[in-house]
Length: 317
Image (tube, rainbow, N blue to C red; front, side, top):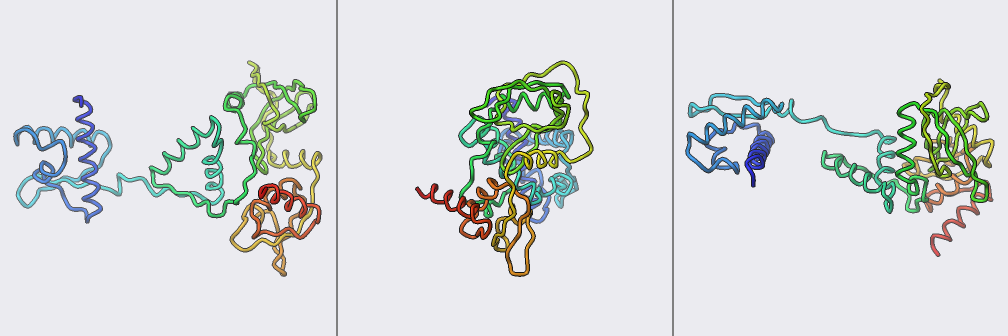
């Protein structure tokens, strides 16, 4: 172990000892106790130890570790960590934030994105954060984030961050021809397991959204955008666009209390215990209800109920 590594090792051990002493009632650590119990201080003469300890105390102070120094009963100096000024407040998340982070943790489990997701969750866990996924559905649809190319995502984020005009190649359906579109982009907006690029379509001269999974190439231009982000909700733009393209339905479900928050949040509970959902995407409703089966039951419409049954039978097979 090199000299620098020994110093870091010794300082780390000293901070851990001070933290442990604080948790055990805030007792003061004397030099004799430190020399006997903290690894890295036991070798050498008493004079060398005292010089080393004094340097380390000064180093910790410069690094921002708040210490209290008092005269001990034996007449020497004793040390205590001021934990309330040193430790960070408890990290907590709202249910919505936890859902986003839970998605990030599961994102790209078999792709390059999974490396970043797992790394992020490792760091959060090391800070004492935990996530409760007890409400997560047993059956989870493979959404856009599982299949998204890291390079494509990086290119989109770069263009958005720099406020650049862009063009991209887009294939609306698997059988459609690929076309080049031009846009002043505003943001990436998630909606019902899918991710959309939202901005001002220069070819249509109107706000538009495009499913990111159907974008194959992204080209940033040196020109800055000339159509700034509007004050209206981008989520609303996505929903309005999809309403014009996809089948929307009204539905009646049984959603037990404390389950399927994603469905309950967009519905209205009636006196008979059922929940009504108005104007929701049919495909999303079927996938999500199947994910929370058998607790969640779709009563109406009959064709959505049949879709849920077909999804569950497919999983069983």
